Length: 415
Image 1 (cartoon, rainbow, N blue to C red):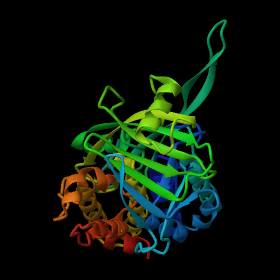
Image 2 (tube, rainbow, N blue to C red):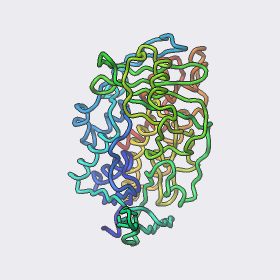
Image 3 (spheres, one colour):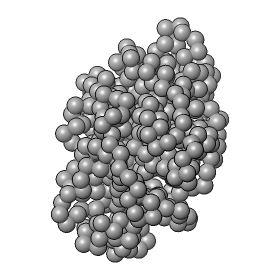
Image 4 (tube, rainbow, N blue to C red):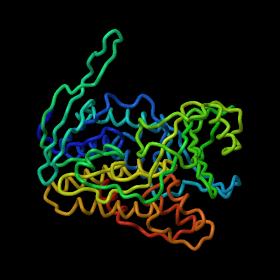
């Protein structure tokens, strides 16, 4: 393992992989580590925004994703069970004027293949034991190995197989909402709103056709989303009443619904009446999502991207999609800093913090439209867009939104 990489990237989910690939394409040497022993064998479906598809095309992996996902061309809006309207995505300000629904595992597989072609290895079973930041970060890593244990009943336990120290020029924390990198850097997550609890369920439809539209269902108590999936199924993300649930969102913290398959089918039938009760429930899970934003994106040589810096609801998949843009923008800012262009990292932070102020509802949505005023808090985090595409959709709905610094930062990062 390289002891003095240009950048240590902690976390090999989509955002961490994206950051490592962007760094390698900019001529820097990344070291990518993850505490997990392998990628997740099953992950819930996600949606890639139009701006993300543009970004992935520039990274060289978009084309292979298209055949593995479900194209989404439009957006139905419902209020209180009644259809309010439909919006086409064909005029989005992007090269790809649609959204793509696919599993997170598929996205990670494509990133892993691209990293392999770029000569970047994912070091699974590696965790950060200690991190000292500043201008010259020092990081102690541990490799986890499995050992047989037990007497009479064979079992396996994880033990520390090796420890060593690396001294990268920069550290990127892309290690999720409970980020060790963020905590080691002394950065807090500020709560913007209460936790929201969701059921995610993959539902096979009797006629095998979920269409090519995302459906958002809004009322005074909850907001739900129904995404079409490849093969005719759909993913229902249904907001549940507040209750005890894991504090942070992580892949491993999806828990079974306490009522089982029958209760899930009943809930789907009541919330999504056009599906009805004659459907088959596949993978499902319940998790809590908090609306939180890091008080800082980083300092000196330690920086954050993705869920390490923010958490929000899963309906519009905004944390992942903005995280991908952050990963590329951060890689670009680091490359510019290495070339001696001071201030690039602070510009990275300023742009994306401004975007999250809107996404998390801290900055009110400027609009005089009564319907949009009523539903803005539920609708903004549920729209399948971010950056310029989100502002475009909001303007079509009657909001008076302007360009934010994040649009400039992303344009620079992906130029």
